[in-house]
Length: 139
Image (cartoon, one colour):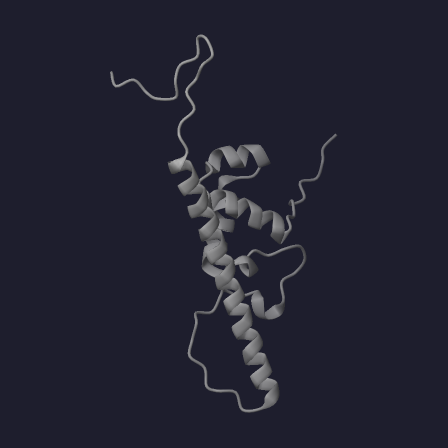
């Protein structure tokens, strides 16, 4: 009856959805219980996303050789010499900009949700015997 404990593997899209929920302000412990994941894993996914965008969240399978190391800091590079190098530099720049767009989209989603929570009026409880959502001023 003993099952082998093989590691669970999650797609990049799944991880991105979880990171969006975290950045929207959901409780990490509650989310971990809901998904049966450790808080540590959730924090690692969030930190990787914040450091490198959606591409930093590895999906299934082995990462490409160049992406297996730590994310290299942005550096100023010499202009490319040939047309092949120019195309490669353009592709790297597009990938960098796509990461930034992904980060900005998550931030926008977070702030939209926060604004929605701030501007919506609280729903008063009308059920009998149910206490209101606000705390008593007595301590």
